[in-house]
Length: 374
Image 1: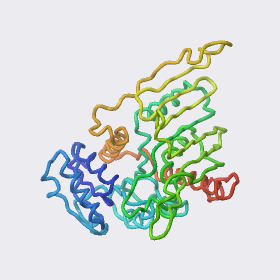
Image 2: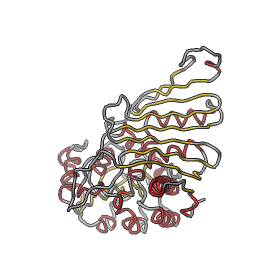
Image 3: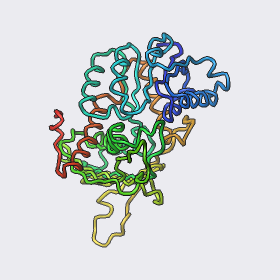
Image 4: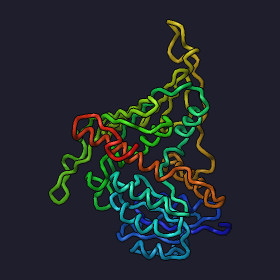
């Protein structure tokens, strides 16, 4: 594909708008169509198009649809970006993946493992690219941390720890994200990014999950058609991988007062890596440099820069990760190369979250094999 590449956005809420703005800054690419049945979301799309480099006339060149079928029938659309509510993904992807258009699926892949398995099978039958949107891989510090792990500086990886202490869920159209049946649960909706990072760093399949969590603080006073939200707001999750690596997620969604929203560490038998998100450095602490008794903590720690890429137009959007993801997707489309993040990886991220929820609900360790995975 040597000419300009046309993008169609299905779902123009908060994340849809972010993708519209990012695509507006890609060389040789443009948003040519949007689809959403909700007026306020289409208004948001129009505002984002107006704010794009093309200016106020940008939206006049964009086809606006209420039905996703009409966008899929539009010959100007080469790439579909799916950013609809989680619980709509499975049904929509039946239609989207039946086309010959390239596809970027915003996380999570689906809300259940069963649906994710079916989508994986559909994606495997396609010649066009099917790219799973797990953009934490493209954030400055996590991406540099992965590079450092692959360099061998840690030796053999043994433990991974990710802490997210943040604000509650934002309001979404129709308040869909207040209920597990729509999101897949907090550990699927919010934490699939982190499970994907664990999976990537561990370099092996997850085999077992043990979790404890609850809804203790957030949304308890809210009511929607007489129904109180049921999404949990805090959890500890332990994941064991086939190669012996263990990982830990520490999630709290009523912890806005902390110094760092996210803290990551990877510990091997030779060194420990540490980073924050947001952040611009990864700390590397070799064991040998602090090996004698009485040595002060932090001795021998060095800093590896993890700068924001200067091409990023909107640093406030996930530290530019969505834009960097789009650059990689566009390069793959133009070169005919494989995707960076597969639907298979999206499936495993969902499965780890689903296993964590089952562990909480049934107060027991959960084997990934229970979902038909191995």
